[in-house]
Amino acid sequence: MDKLYYGSGSCTIETSQIVALRISYRGSIEIDDKTEGSHSIMSNNKMIIIFPISEINVLSELFEYSGEFRILSVVASDSASNKVPVQIKKQMHYSEMLDTNAEDLTLRTEELNVGYRYKNKIKKTSIKQKTIDNLHSKGGLYYYDGTEYRGSYHIHKETGQAMTGATHTQDSVNLQVKKLKDKKWRINK
Image 1 (cartoon, one colour):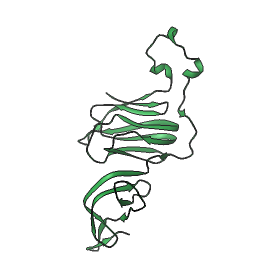
Image 2 (cartoon, helix red, strand yellow; image 1 turned 180 degrees about the vertical axis):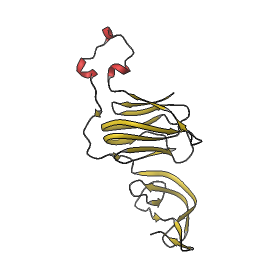
Image 3 (cartoon, rainbow, N blue to C red; image 1 turned 30 degrees about the horizontal axis):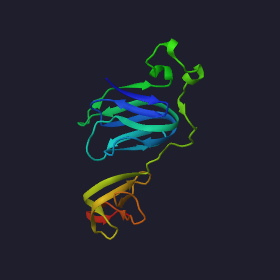
Image 4 (cartoon, rainbow, N blue to C red; image 1 turned 30 degrees about the vertical axis):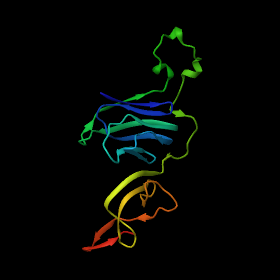
């Protein structure tokens, strides 16, 4: 069975098939995305979603965090969008990660007791990576004047705004998606 490990500021998965995750959790954390460039992470105060944005690769290292983090449930899927069962493994105590005899330990007992909080208390969940970078449009995105845009673009996670350029710069320009309304195309502003 596939296993999701978390605790001590790290969240990883041991799998040969999972490409997307939805994690329901309690707490507030600051997330540092450690997935490969083919995936992105979005979150709110109750859920973290990890999804592929380009080629579909199997997940391994997910993210590092600080704050209080308690996973309640996980829904995982493979490349065919089938649900995959996942076992959640808390790594809350160093003793769970040690592969040695108790007599050989050189740590103090205070160092063995680790809880759900790692480092600082965080007021509101956030992600360090504010954009989904290095996307490429082959059509479907438009400038405000209606001219179609093809090329590299990025998306701001907080607002969902697509902009020109593989990464955000001062020269990035807002892009729009045309929507059908009353049988006429219009630019969504």
